[in-house]
Image 1 (cartoon, one colour):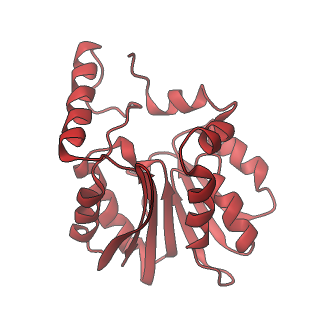
Image 2: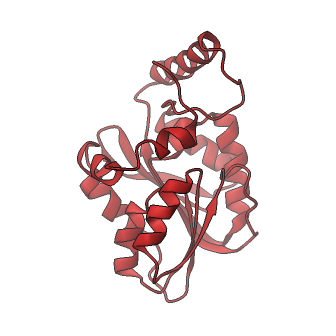
Image 3: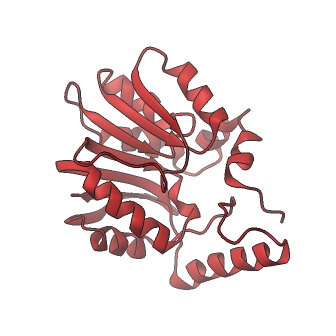
Length: 217
């Protein structure tokens, strides 16, 4: 398996991406609208979307709250171009970059969301991100995470070990972002969210290996 840098991987797969995500991931036709249904419905709320891609969750969300203001962050300029075309009439600001590096304004967002994006990163990377995210939420703000999780600690360990083996074998940059699934267990993810300062984090629904976690500031 040849690893590809994250932005190159998604740029090469923009055609057919929506169809793939909705039809080839078990539960996707349910978990995208379910995730959107958890986001705030009030007029003028501010929502942060981490790894927004082509905006599949936003298609459902804007049908429920067309007046929401959204900031979407993604590494892929091609994905963001597709998203912008879909939502040219909505209040949305797009940022091309890594959500690990992009600064978040403190106490800015009523809610944040991420769908099928964060299962590529280490616990250390996520902990730093979640601390920054917690500070970016309003006092009553919350984070909705729908993602793919490892079924056991042994599986989690294998994914990370295999990624390091592939990077070493292929002579790749140790700190660059490559596309390879390294999901944590849902229990480990919840521990990180609580360590980052979220007062409560719990699983709301499951679809095979995909879970929706709600974390409150």
